[in-house]
Structure formats: structure tokens, C-alpha cells
Image 1 (cartoon, helix red, strand yellow):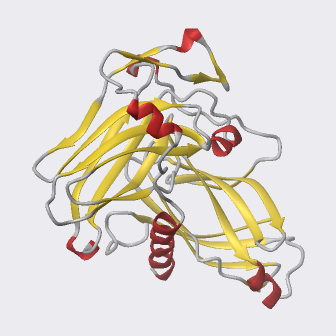
Image 2 (image 1 turned 90 degrees about the vertical axis):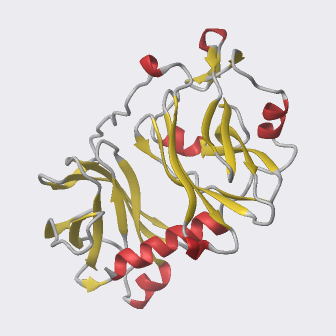
Image 3 (image 1 turned 45 degrees about the vertical axis):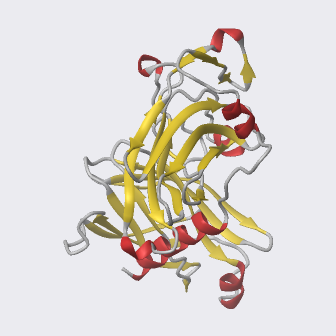
Length: 306
């Protein structure tokens, strides 16, 4: 459970410290200021090229409209500076509370991806911004055409997170229509190595890499084979017979594959005098993500050469 707690805390830290609002003067602001309404023709990107044949009819989506707030998905912009943008507006109807909106979970074409987004909206004000998915990541995973975006959004009182969510909900955006939505399928590579395959999950080693000033990473591809959300935790690890715990854990949703990387820091490798990675052993714990009191679904040890 220590790994789970640390991973959750690290994820929250990244979301709050690395993510930020797009800011004024951005493509998001310009697009929203153009007064997008139902019936507006939006342009999408297919394989990196905007074409007239890719025009779509976008209908605004109201995610929530109550006494506390209103959130509306106003459009998409595939050609933002950092990647693919989902444009939205959020009205804070509170008189004295600042709200924080975060992306709790997200997927592109059914592949779990994290835009690491968080932004604050002051009382009585309206924010117009964009949630952006990295173009580098989309290209890395072979996604040229975005046909399906799923966002789970949470809104909190900025000064009282302990009070819990003010609102939480999931919205789905299909820029070309639901009938045109496609599901992500990863093309296997000759260099792939399946390191775990059981009734719960298939884990494929995509790459093992040493990065200067960062450490060593195992790039993994997870497929949840169950009908429930599972928690994949590295309870212990060895590199070349030296104990080296990376403190890694991940939520894997049913029907939603996930890329994630297990990292060993440069300091940890140096402390264990590890310069080359010849063999890795992982003690893997698989649990029901929504029942921490239940017994492990699986506890297994896997050893492989990256």
C-alpha cells in the first residue's frame, strides 16, 4: 500500500505543479472568443494535415449546469501550439469561493492519456481555456486522427480540498460523430517483450532506456483483461540482483489500455552501483482498485532482460 499512496501523491503533485491554464492570447482563447455555437464548422487534423474533407459539425456539450457552476465544451483545436486541444468554458457561480478544475482521468481513442491539467477560477468569473494533449505523445503512440475524447473532470474548493468534490463528471467528445469513433489498437513490434500475461492483465515491455541525469526507465504497455478497474503495484524490484524499489503503481481501467513508465532515479542507481541493466525482477501486486480491503487478485514475481 505504500507504493499506492506515494504514487497517488506524486500524481496529484504533478497535476497541480506542472499543469497550468493555457493563459491569455493562446489559440484556445482565440478559438473560444470566435463565439463557437451549435452548427459551427470545426476543422480537425487527419494524420497531421488539415483537409477540407475533415470538416465536422460540432455541437456544444454542457457537462454541468447548476447553482455552483457551469462547464461547457465549446470545441476542439487540433493545431494548438502544444498539441490537441479541447476548448471549454467554466463559470464559477459562487460569490466567495475560488474553484479548481482538474482532469481526473482522460482517454484519446480509448487509450488512457493524461494532459496533467489543473486551473483555478475565481468567484463570480468565467474561464475560457483548453485542455491540451501533447502532440509528441500522440505521435509517439501513432494517433494521427483524434475521433474520441473522454474526460473525467473534478471541481474542488481551492482553499478546502479536504471538503471533497463540488462536482465530478465524465464527458465524451466525438469530433466526427460517434459513428466515426475508432478504438486504439497498438501495432506490435519485433522488439516487444511480453513480461506478464494472465487472466487480469497483459504487460508488454516496449523499451528499456537509460537517460542522462534522469535514470533508467522501463516503458510498459498495459491491457486490462477484466471488467473492473485494477491497481498494478510494483511491491519490490531488483536490478542485476541489487534491491532497487522504483515505487511504481498504476490504475488500469477495463477496456482502456495504458502506457506508463517505471523509473529508477539516477541517485538510486548510483547508490546501488548500477551502470548497466542486464536483468530486472519485479514483485507485482494486482488489486481491485475500488476495494483496498480485499485480498490481492494476484501477487507474482517476473524476471526479464530488457
